[in-house]
Image (cartoon, rainbow over all chains, first blue to last red; front, side):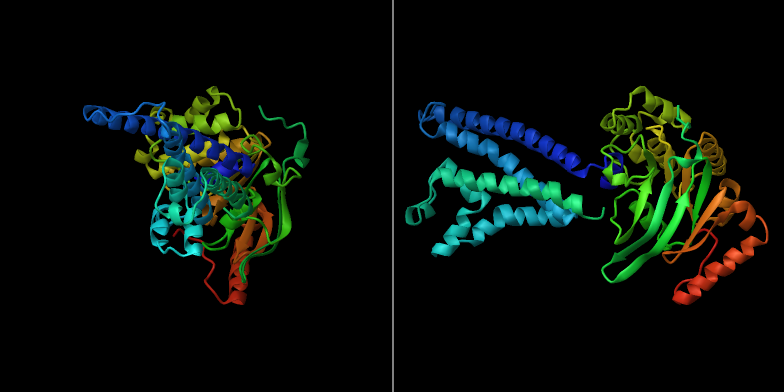
Length: 169
Length: 255
């Protein structure tokens, strides 16, 4: 399909930027809906135990925003990998490895390993949502975690826009 | 309608010393030819002659290693939108099977600000208007070819490229395609048709560009070369070119 696309619209960067925008918007909406739905469901259950919290409770909004934004960040990472790899199955394997398998492999308490762990998408999302165990020994800020997520999204977007522009299709 | 005021000088495809390497492998070697408007030009050669690679380079999908290729004086990739300049059928299978014929063409038309009414026009023109709201996944190969031709015609472009447009078409379809190509050329358009069927090109083309192993073997008019004794000469040249490369043989028959 991409040959048809680039024949119909030879301005490849514009096409890829438009595709990125659609993916980002659709997955953000999906993320918001899922975050609110799971928050609502959890509160429904917890209210029976009289331990429910409202939106105003400390950290709740931050957790909801992080949970909503993890969807577009992951989607952009997947799109960047797809643009670079150009093979569906390999892209799925690479995306799952990068987003989920890699963080679970970085389990040593060494300074370097923890630094690498802090650069992963899932760990950054954890840091924004709550305080994971690694933070006690090697502290890092919520702001730093936001920068990590932003950097992943930007690099993935740049790869998705510029790599197909240079390659033979 | 197509503006033919430019006469025969406009809308040419000009290939100049085009070379393509994939790594160390030489795919297309120093290819030069011109495709003129107002004619059907056949792009002939056996399988593996690199006709599709050349078409991709004309469309800027593949970058050339050396040399230039322009359509109407400009590299195709420098155009922001393509459909009104060049219509192309590269691979009829390059479709989303879950979409309907109409929705596919509407999306493509919209990307090039072509009015919606044009979609139904081209669907009628290629004879699949009845199947417009069916999923492409259920189409026969012949119907997909017709849809591919409809895609090429969508922007009413002055230059049209077709890669093996006859694959999967029944005899009635083949007859229809010949008439369509003749008609498009008669309107002053540049029609470039890639095929491995020399016998078919005899019926359709005015000019022939013959490619073998990525090299130009002949660029001559059909009247001179194929219809008369020249056909034998062409065959000999094909064989001679292949002999040099000591690879496959040049064949004029279907797969």
